[in-house]
Length: 403
Image (cartoon, rainbow, N blue to C red; front, side, top):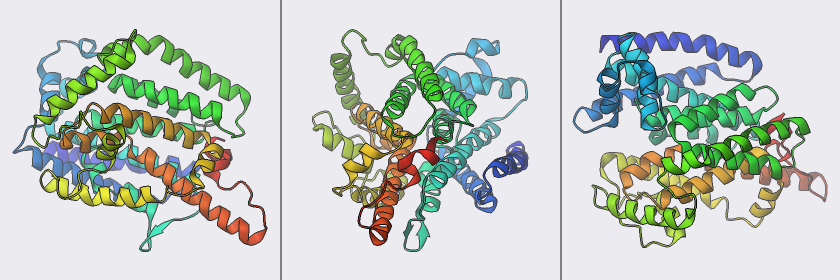
């Protein structure tokens, strides 16, 4: 435990100069807010650690495997669960990290996901949107459920950081290609099927966007992602237990089997017979108080109520027009969010697992909503100035999002 406390302080010390480096290129960055965010995230790491003392946790299995299952570091290399063992192995075996120290290290990775997403939101929105006087972006990056599932040893923290790095790179493609590449590599190693979906999202976003991105950059990213998706397709299908020759049928069979299997577990709900819209609603917005699995479920229900309020903003006749005019970043978020939601909503039927898994993609959804709110506000201002509204916000023009 003492080692974890020391590491917590050391990592905070390492965070400060890294934040200063970011601020050098992003002068508006609020260092005080991000410092507070660090300690807020650490608090959830402590809450998670206390909670798992009396319940089962994958984090213990990850630590035990890294401690005893592999003689050499490269023996642990692989994708999926094995990759977490691979990342943990040198810290456990070379540096002598304890379980508590590994929990703190992975929580630190999750923290950087929030830093990157905060930057993405702020640099692609022109206006400050508020709820009861509170900045929505600030409120979003402090949502408790998002912190809880990204503050422990496991896939959640590292894939969250990887997804944030991908979007951080796309947000300023000129200067952040390394962040984009590193994020894609992380996501591929943790969840190859999510990498595949992100690759499709990036391709769709860049091809369809109206952004003024230099042609050579578009071609370079499209070619790189396209080649990776092509060559890794079979590996992804094997990882997901899908038949590439009969993809739809094998996915349907897997979905039915998984949903029935998970429904038998605690907090299970059999959604195998639900129509797709109801499956998606369950994935995005449940539990909602009456079906909340325990104290965590109650807290998540408040969060889901907040998601419902935000989602209501999209019931506007201008939303489809906005999507057509939106930037590559918005389109990428849209494809990634919808495709991941369809895939996961068909295979998950345990509310506890749904609560954990959707933390990967909900920020994509929230970014789309805030970008649309930006669009509406810009239209309102434009109408006051002249009769014909011009193309509005940074999230639409793409000039801020990608250049």
